[in-house]
Image (tube, rainbow, N blue to C red; front, side, top):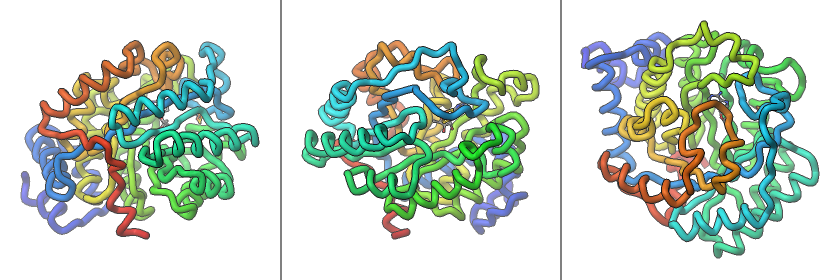
Length: 360
Ligand code: 5AD
Ligand code: FES
């Protein structure tokens, strides 16, 4: 790698300009950066990749983000809400398949019935799996009290993507009302951290109006916020959303993908001890997308274990992979895929973020 670039990494000189230089790398220098990200992971964490069984249990959403396929104004989506039994069954599946932990994700709701229901589900899952299954929640913005309550009922990790750390860009991607405020989202992320959760966030890459400078500042934000876990992936346009109208201004998909790989590798070098997901959106662009992200420094994979007849309705973006496969197919093919790239499944482990234990 070019000496000036190598110096940035060796000196941990993560200024905005330097980060832009890393994010725009292509060709041989990019290859070197991605390898450094992967090597950094192997040195600090080893070759284990942790599984999170993902249950997208409902696509009912009260919000209206301009980029998202399950936004409430999209009338083209059949809405579903998995019965509790089916969620418990999926949790049992994750446990039996040694996934170590579970992610419960849905569209955003904060009514009392929903909050209570999650609370009950958490307790049941804990009981049913003898406390062995780790539980991550990805249920959007809630009150500090709700976060605390869910933490006490057994969830220990929470994912809430900031989507972009730039207030102005955030505002362009969401309706301008209290339900979609950047300030509120940031406060929620703080409240999640304060409630005691291992805190995960992330951004989309290649959004309309987003530049490499925005992404460089996103990386600085993740570090300043002291996040424990990160999930980032390319933005993929969805026809039934308002942002689709801006598709002509987007970077080509391939560029979004390559930039996302550089984001993963760079963040791994910046924060060696966090957990980072190889996201499904990477695979939606490149069939080997998740493997490439793991080779660049990602160490978490989230196999979708939502019962497959409903999965096709949880389309945040189009061409989402694995929407017609059964969960078991995915489980088997995943181990082979990991082996191919020299990684090993961290079966039966929660695979906590080491960063969390340094932080608290
Ligand atoms: N493209 C890529 N990612 C998306 N998400 C939502 N819509 C899209 C899209 N069109 C991501 C958001 C959200 C996560 C659950 O999915 O980052 O937080
Ligand atoms: Fe559901 Fe954004 S559209 S949270």
